[in-house]
Image (cartoon, rainbow, N blue to C red; front, side, top):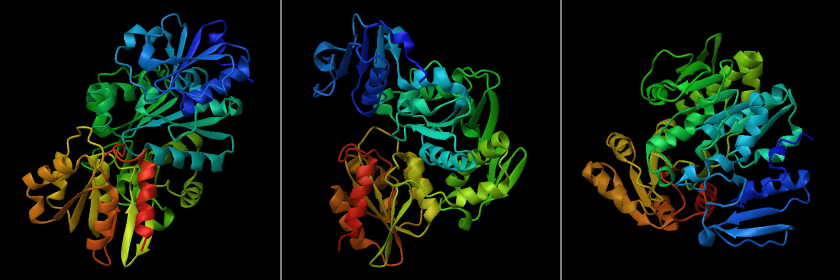
Length: 447
């Protein structure tokens, strides 16, 4: 077993955040150093019974300067407002993993589409070569798979901004699919958010590869970049020359093109053709996969839950669960991809996101009804009325999620689609977007 955390030997170490990744970090350290004394830090008291030879640090009561500690393993998503105080001692699973296995790693990030693109890439590469693993933001801590990585392993790593925020190494192939306003409750400014994302390529070497959306090139130009640049055009707002591009149903890369017809994939919409195009480039250009193998493997991929997932048709109404939607662009793409949307369910936690782009789209969208739920209800309703949307689309402020779904079932015409694509986070009412999607599916199946 390769010991990639030998640097913590004889050092006072704290694991900060005892969620899934924190527990994974503890288990890996214990497998290497079974007797090492560790400190476990969290803002909530945890049961210490499963953690012998450990002590608990209450970050609410004791703060987060961690005086006297040599190494701080931080879990993703925990905000650090004054990182300069601890930056020299701060590390993470992502940082350690990239230090050891960055050359094996295909790191995919972006505001939207990273889960679909990374899970599809894993599916394609796994079918091509069984020595492939999938880790990261999808819910699989990378330390859980360390013992399966050798020099020939391909690692598909879905990378969130939180995982990238403090890393000092980048993957061999780094992808930023797109950048939209998101996570401002954590980062405060877009600049901070984008800087975190940029780390997917900032520490690359000249023989590495970075794939960037043409729409984000100017924004990202201020960050250092040494890797070979591959440009990608999603075609959602404008079409420009790019190494990876989508035209109609055809995806084009430098050394070829492939037509993706509806019968070739369960993925719906032009934004998903763009995601497919990024993976097509990697498979064809870097692995030599031919088009026949690519299309055959693509046809067997099944979309992840809550991402434009067809729930079913009940009472003549077809329901789609796009609970993953937390920004304007994803909701816009969902409506465009499906067409025939009778009712759109919007709203959730209010993180201060600018909804003007969504309002502008809704001024011409062919939708009969909008149902509003969650904290954003009043702000969305006021904005949509200011745009005059209420004069052409019925708007129903329902606040409560179950009431909103009930109203949507009542008002959606037979033969039409009822779409949950909230353009807002779920955290005002649900643990996460998965729970929100599960609740939606349960409610629409009820008589």
